[in-house]
Image (cartoon, rainbow, N blue to C red; front, side, top):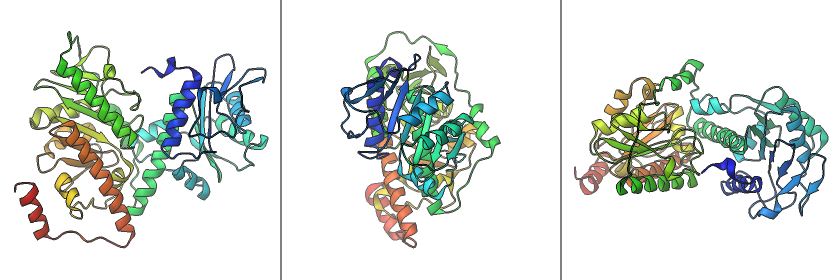
Length: 428
């Protein structure tokens, strides 16, 4: 789906719905806007339930200040206007009060973003704006001055966050990624010392060769069309359950010995359409499409493990928190966790970029889940549903483990209990 073709009202409704549904603002909190090239600003209204906004609720403010709409523009319209004046390159603004970023604003610390490479690249320009009364001219001035220094993410002291972008999706992606980083850092901090990356490690991401030679696929088989549909359904489901984010998370599914389908790069995960999924065949990519940067890793796994028919790499906050610390992901604590996840090895950061063989060789039928330090959780399955189930169980288990560690330790099942699980459920 091409978001740019949507009317400004529809863009604002779509993004505010995501923000509200994912608990990143409240009924009365938050406001977002979009500026057109002639200076017209479309903005969410003041005093209207964010959970039930309609097309007619969105307010248009003309360049001369005339308000067109049945509501007043957001009470914080002044700072939106001030930001656009300070940064003509910005075309969209997202302001809300997501819980993790509000926590950082209360303690007046910036969340670490150099904990996963993608987060740092999307949100590396961050600073604070000094506190001022919400809706006041002084707050607008404080925020605009912070944006004028080249920042795209601005935390408001004891308030929330404002993110800007070249379009509505760009602003939202930055906002969502920054909140994800804050959640991840807080969860990981409860487990132990949080590992951060060096700039050299962050730059390793660009060593991936995902621009494979192109080929013309010709007529589409029904199996391929079904695979595209199923892949999108799993991706949308993972997004709705916050197991992947708008920009991060890769899903692939095998078609046959020579080909597989994989999600593309830089396409919003919630908006992913079957036509945007990329076909890979004999080391070549479907003409005109750019697959995920993980394409060669997925290709190697399929080639070396004929039993694997689906792979998902993702960063769900609780599971990914274990990627940032040395604390064990103790699967021998919950029967379902051990049955589906088994023991989960941890691979060093960089293996996914420089040593795909090491990642692939770490996988087998008894090791269907991997943690890659400061990167992602990788799960495999005999089907898309099995791989997705493993990802979901990993996230549920990780959340319980984080709480268990905070409660003062955990008790693992003994060897006899594990042997009973292996005999009854795993045929071992």
